Length: 126
Image 1: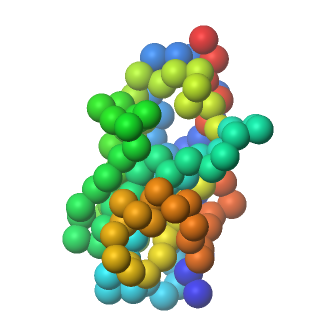
Image 2: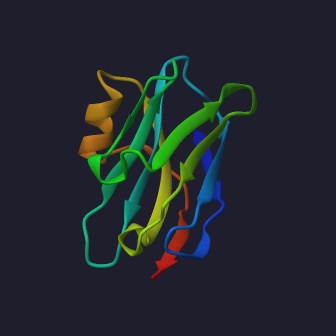
């Protein structure tokens, strides 16, 4: 079992920056995908960013150049650095993790994972 606990959400003005954190505990695979997903009311869940255990990262086109995903393996902590935030970034953000199967990009695009955090709300006002 893997437990994921997110933090760092909040309410900010457009153009601001925010960093989300996700601490993982329990069993961690030697090779895995971890990532951030978001879901706004009335919209489908979107895979925002994913990172493989070797550090290879992928981000959605909608956040390219503004969001950066990183991982601190020593502390089992996943980060999402968000800058130039827009009102359309408003959503509940979820951390997710899964054993690496084929591609973390495919995993992110499918939006399916066996392990999820409880979510942290990000609200961006214009």
